Length: 468
Image 1 (cartoon, rainbow, N blue to C red):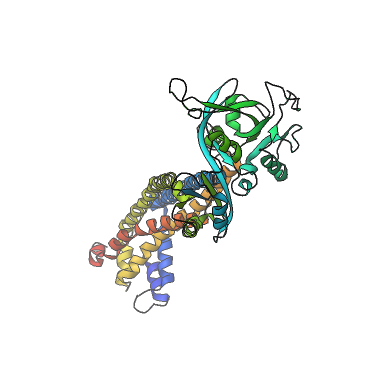
Image 2: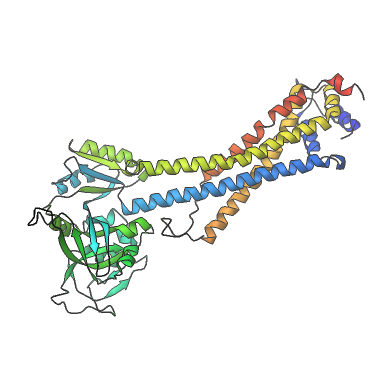
């Protein structure tokens, strides 16, 4: 920029009282610094690198945080699909008056449904293999409204037990009919999937629902006979050692939760079957509760505590899985901090750009101050330059991040289900997070302008023009 242009600009444009220049002049000067001449092309190159650095940092930050948010949300949904939002227990370990307790729970504000359940860890055995599992007793009419078991069913007996059907996602009535009929006895099936006459070695048996991965491990299918084994359920043997108790059941359905751990470990039978097998009578382990708003589960749990006697207590999903979600939050924070270093390094280049401008434009800064530009005006000029670099980089990075997230979401990057709990890379773009990242990146860049702007405003006019 020539000395004449600067003089004309500051003589012709109206002055803002108390500043010695107006904002339009300051913007014009700041923009002209970013458009360096060919002799100062290096400044423009470093400026472009700064913008690219900020853009890359913001892009990577948006993509990584979106993926980690996707993992968090997907994990939460799957946990809340297999488990209830709130679980009510008794200090004795068993609830003996479940109908009365459920009646009190259902009257609490925010409660949508409740269901009793029985919980035990046992073994299941097929003709080929065995495995330790969690066996959960369910209410045949209530549980479908509390957990996602019904929605997760992928195959099972037909309503009248005359064959096997593969369920579509929308076959809710057929799925509900299967759950409701688990307490009935199921016939064996032929290789073609048709029912055959029961016989002594393969009689009618109560049904069990197992996970897709457990079915593969046990090498069984719908209609096959398996055994559930309670290692200590048979009482003391002849030598005083505990003996196992065994019960035969038939695979009546298969579920696919999308979470490997659940699909390999969880099994479901009617409450009555498990109560009889464990000699519990009418007692249940606890009561599952579904609430209308999962984010207010702790308040509903507090309401349930107030409604029930002191011997009962409620645990909400946030407390039951507190360590897991705390670990996810720490992991997301750590990854965000690490990736934010890219933005900080790019923002540090802004300091380099502005300091080079101060060095190369020292004479023009001195002329501006000699013509009446205040230290505040000089600082604003250089802060505008750095803010412009940060703003352009942030906008480009945000656009790039959103495009990257859209690509990842559309590509559905496959994952190994025996390593991860889901089969594709989840991507969830949270608008608030995108805004926070953008504001944070811009503020980081803006803070990096303060020192160079202060150096420019502190330039001594006499020293700068001494040899001109």
